[in-house]
Image (cartoon, helix red, strand yellow):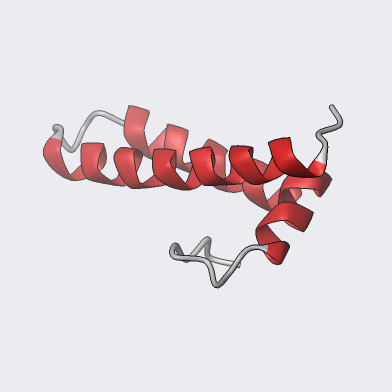
Length: 69
């Protein structure tokens, strides 16, 4: 899947927002519910492996979230 630069930047912003939501959901939900953590991990995987998203994230100001990389 190819994204142009503007769409990739918007996608990175959406993924960053989703990461915050999934992190909050993990805190609020039952410990045995893996959904938020699985979704969080999928977002991180997309942000760190999809070439256009990696480029867009690198071009943005300092990342607000630590993606563990």
